[in-house]
Image (cartoon, rainbow, N blue to C red):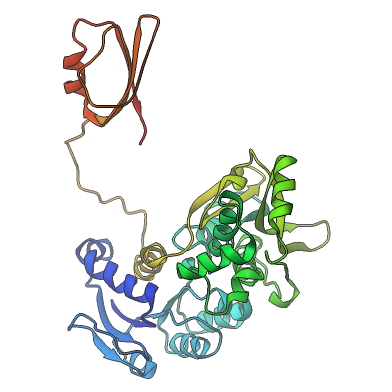
Length: 384
Ligand code: HSE
């Protein structure tokens, strides 16, 4: 497999790094060499010497040896040209370009199918969290009724800061911006447009319909004030920017808007820059996908998985090697209740009645058990 990566920003570099670090394992997966032949970017960058650097994307898409073009420049202009031209040459395309798929998905998919090429875009929604393929494939037995979630990490980070650090919107925005979270065009994040791109893509895959992006109403978080958050809290709610898509009696409802969610709901407890997607369907009922929705390796993880999928024919071959060495996992923190004080490193300790109770630091179980000889005790693993 020969790959050309067009766009060497945060995610593009991350993808090149993962492909280099995981080369041997990935090659085993597809039974052929995985070679990054080109890195294309307008900015001068330093690449490993075996990768050809170019500023002209035509070098990549006109090279007959290239079978996968990775588009990571974003936007809906040059990126669209690159993707369409690559597909027309029968090259597979992997992209993280949510705006382009949301606006021009139909044309891109038609071009791909006319030229027998594949287009993958798992990285466009939820960073590295697998949500596009589950919505499209893994729940196929079900009729999907509803998808909702927090699909924009930046606004979730801002809302979290407003609540936990008692900041107003502008103060929280300044911090998010300082950390590099906010898109160059801040309106994409703050006005709910980025989340709208993503819910459109999920809805398209879940409901197998094209939806006109321009008809999706998006309201962002600019009007969410600290005062509203406090009132919501008093009422037992938290305010989150929720993207939603569901079947209606007639047509579909798709929108993005700040929404009060009961404080005990899992979605209300997704904080910082994390994303969550909850899918409601008729047999599985509810399933939730949670994780980091942005970041170099986080998003590059989905990009590289998609690259490999373009060449992995049969995911279900099961030709694994046999492994005989299986052990219990014994290096852990432990909860211990015993009759006497112990000579161990611990995180927490108290005694009550005749019991001595510990949360230990991480320790091998046999080491801990040596201490417990001749004792009556109870112990469980502690996660963390
Ligand atoms: N601006 C986006 C977000 C980046 O905050 O979620 C990842 O798509």
